[in-house]
Length: 416
View (tube, rainbow, N blue to C red):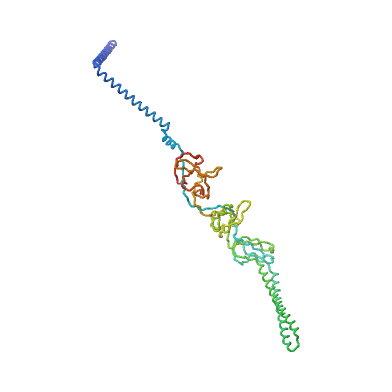
């Protein structure tokens, strides 16, 4: 059985080979039968297609080379400018214009009473009996601050009053004697000389009355000065006396009063800033330890400058407030007039050994250095009082990485 299957398969294979040889023979015969003219046209058409493919490939290569050359060479002067512009840095610029700024001067100093009145012993002094006031109280003019023992002085006053009575009695007697003598002159019992003597006696007695009255008034005045009184209304700042203490005119200050409770700040200001101040300008004073500000006015400017620290004192008057304690430390912001000038952010102003300067961007997009002079520092920025008119395009930041003549791409902003 197996040999027969193999023979059958071999027959089919030989049949297939005969069929293929037949088709090849037929095809060969068919191509040989095609006329030469037709074969030439087909070859020419194939060659034309090949030439077209070569031309397209060459054109594509030329375009590619041109693009690469343009990209790497810059494509001429115009391309150089465009490439340079694309590679130049982008910087933020501001056109500040001109603004009105309220000038301010910052200063510090010590609080004090504007009119501090020291009070001491006016009379002869003595032992203090009572002190009816305390520091921090308001007192009125003439109010008793301390009472001094006056037991001895009272006796002296009574003695002086009695002397007045004695002098009056003597004067009355002298006047009576003179009156009687005048009646006897006409009768010749009293001489003219006696009348003159009696008149002088009467006049002396009257004078002694006036002396006694003056002594009594002096004694009363001295007794009145034994009481220590307030010379004016105000706030009692200090009390330096206690009952039982013996005081005299040499004791010194016993009380301190701020007249009408008015305070002031003794602000220390540099001589340059002091020249910008004027009497009457306002100031905001903030005592240390409080967040509250008080409005005052400069009422006096020091006529001299300290030779050591080159500062002067601006005295700022303040109304009474519990937070204003003499001897305390406070800061002040003093208004010093208005300035009209461009205002730049702090980052725009640079400094080196030549001074302050800024970078501005011109119409050609090139950076240029411009020397400036800064002025008042505000919350909005720094005023420029010299070097700019406000129309320039000023580089806001990163000026330290630029150099004069460098080409940039400015981006205008309103500032910060």
